[in-house]
Length: 439
Ligand SMILES: C[S@@+](CC[C@H](N)C(=O)[O-])C[C@H]1O[C@@H](n2cnc3c(N)ncnc32)[C@H](O)[C@@H]1O
Image (cartoon, rainbow, N blue to C red; front, side, top):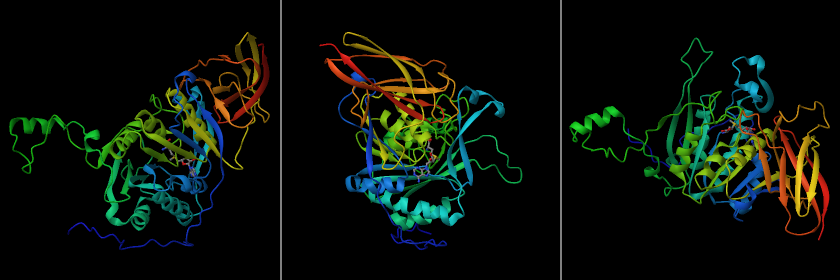
């Protein structure tokens, strides 16, 4: 049978309570401008990190970004019925679960599949609108919901726009005894139009040694095509990448974190440097990190504060040269329960801050500095947008974090400095202090 190129789907998914999706935008408020490593930045913002439910957030983005995003990757909840926790602190290195410290991160629990589809469908529709005419979307799911999502994607994008059904295979332990171990995810790839970006040369891989051997001895073998052994091949639609395991250097502790190598292949294949890559279920921020590393602009969103903090910490550890912005949804949390205690010392135009403790207004207060993940300073806080100019970040699974930061003010006079801290439960807090510099 010839592969169908029909643009109309031959089936439509019905579920209990299916209705026309309604979209209400949230108001996005600029929360933070972050200048990593202060001195090296350009003034061009290349990234946006958005906090809040992505339905309202994406609806709000339509006015500026409709038809402009070149690549969307989404790794939404999979309909697993589980509530996920993040592992925090050094205990996560232990083999004994009793030594793990955990904190709630996100829920993948639904009344039924219909409620799940009510969540997914309107979001896929908006993503279709946000994609540029040459844009591509990668929808990452597994056996729980992939079949249903395929029918929805055919409806929204058209069956002819399906580029690939990628199978990501991996291995690892499994409790399953009466069936084969479920060790693959499915990534549905759709293009917005026929003229989509696909950079085959950017993702070529070496041929299998057995292929190299065969063609080295007889270049004519195999369907009349001679492989270019030096250039390598475009990968098949099944990919093996190891999962991010417990002691993996990429590991953040955030659950269901995806490997950077997987994102790298997707971003290289389906976007170009300077284009915009978005992930509206960003979790620990893998897409944003890899996009930034590959010179793409990025947009990342998550409704979980812990996800946003993890992504932020990862971005800071990347030593990016360009600044980025953090937005909050109106009505979302603005401050935090932590009340950083600082001591400020001045010597002429030089100011130093020592971070002394991070007590919490809401118990429990956690041990300091073990539970401090990172902190940052705005040396001239305007009382509204936090302009992060200096940051101290703990490396993953590291005991060290710098507790002193300094700054030389170019101008005398009155200044308000602000210090913001983030602990490993995803809780934050801010303190401000007035200083006067002699003329
Ligand atoms: C499977 S995880 C993403 C993991 C990510 N790919 C990574 O590498 O870390 C799904 C994420 O979607 C977020 N999420 C779920 N529903 C959301 C919603 N309505 N709006 C924004 N984020 C949502 C969760 O908080 C969670 O962090």
